[in-house]
Length: 182
Image (cartoon, rainbow, N blue to C red; front, side, top):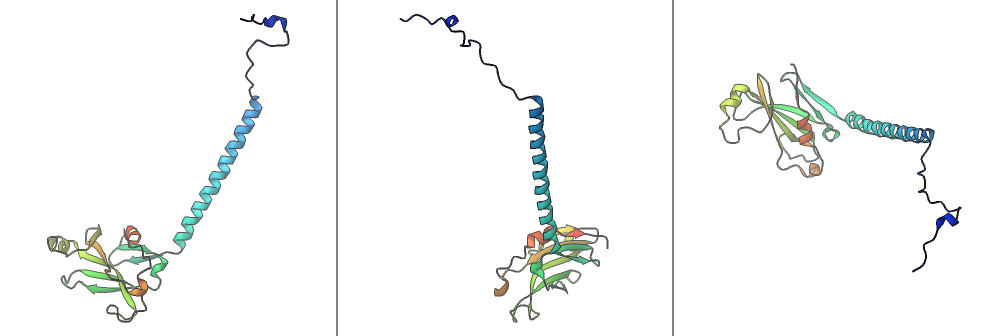
């Protein structure tokens, strides 16, 4: 077995563990400041881009307001040229149906040439809604209610061919429905 090496004979070899190198406090503060500034700049750019996207999207929407029945909702550009036609419910004379119609190239669709009923909003007096609660298929899908009216909606089952691939985003439109003071 070889003799152990006596490190005392070699003064240029250090036997102490190396000291850990640390950044001076100023350098650490500088690097931290740069990282913080970069985070603020990145966050500001991200916020501005997302804010602009929301503003641009809403700039293309229209609000339909009905003061008589006390509600409004927001429609997208897919609804451009729409009209609203009011009719009495065929089975309940006190109930009003508001048909939101969109232009179509089909002349034999529905009762108004050149328009298709895309969305129907029912305006039910509260008492009539309660009285018809047990009737099969009397109501559409509930939206909202106030002291005077209950609102429901239904939509087309078979769209005209030229409108089949257009996204009217009914659920998004219904989600914007708001009761207002009339």
